[in-house]
Image 1: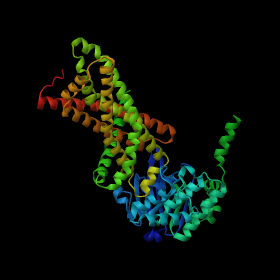
Image 2 (image 1 turned 135 degrees about the horizontal axis):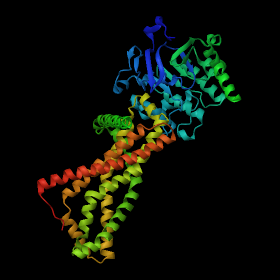
Image 3 (image 1 turned 120 degrees about the horizontal axis):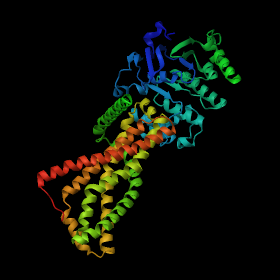
Length: 267
Length: 269
């Protein structure tokens, strides 16, 4: 299934065309197509190791496709040299699965880092901007803390503040709720919704947390064996008939796997 | 068997190619970066890190190598009647060979491994990817300052190794063996030429740069997990150590050829 909508291609924020990627013998992306519309939150679900994060890494060009093209605002980026990406990447925010805060910097320095890199604001203005970004994620006052002193949820929120430091047009969330307890995970979901409404950004969330997916998604895509096998709304996924989608949504393993496990158990 | 050898060879060549590309990328950021204050702001804390970590080991190594050399050579020099020239033997050995090599090995062990571990952990925890995503080139941000710190501090550390080696040689010669102090220093100043200092300086500069770039390359390319970081550190030290020895041979051979061509043979006795 190609996750595209030809009517809206002209104003697509991101467009992936026939993207193939393999690592060794493993085919991770098998010619996927994807169009992301402005202001929409797209959630990509799929089993662990399905290649969801690989899609995000193609969008920010941390990875290059083996075949196919990646466009950001209709500019092809998969073949650009690293130096030409310097102007494009600040327009995207990326929340890493492990937060990826710089250990050797305080919370304030972490958030200020991209600001110093890409703006000419003075120290006072940067401090003020950092304070506002931290306030948006509800952590104003933690500027002097070190990443090692923060809880998992706080780290994600600081990383989110850093991701939005330059007011990006596109925010990519890689497993934003993984490793958090349900209340903390819900805080992150609420933050995603809040940023969506306040900043009117385009968002892509990669997750296997269905509660999170239902809460934040305008559109859900399911990746399976290198292809999208579902593209629809959070409501429509509940009615999906494909057994692979149903198993994932209902959080149970397939009958085939279950049978195999039971046979092994009896052996 | 042949397939395995072929596979290994191809793997080594590819690895060498990746290292060359990495070094080239670093050079492309290094040269324009030298005139930017931000490069030096990033490098200053690393000067402290590298110097602070390595200096004590260098002092101990230099001192004991000087002591051992002096003790081992004394009897032979005494038998030949050259015991007052012990300082020459020690200083030439230290300034041209042992100083740069020992300082390099200590730098590789003490700092190279730590740099690899630091960058490897940053790779594993996606901090290096985070830099790329923020439009900040990780090679410019992380590799250039570390390379500069190793490159520029290696000669200074070598100097300390030479000084402490010579002082400990003096201790053995003068305090323990009763050789007069003034001939010890006189023969050193007479025998050591600017050329010897230049050779030692060049070697240490090359070793420092190689250690820096190898440590960063191994850290950037380490595999995931704690085992990956540990393995990268070991590989970093072993590669640096071997490269130091090989490079020492080639630089030594080349420069002694140049010296002979320009100044002719020099006797130290």
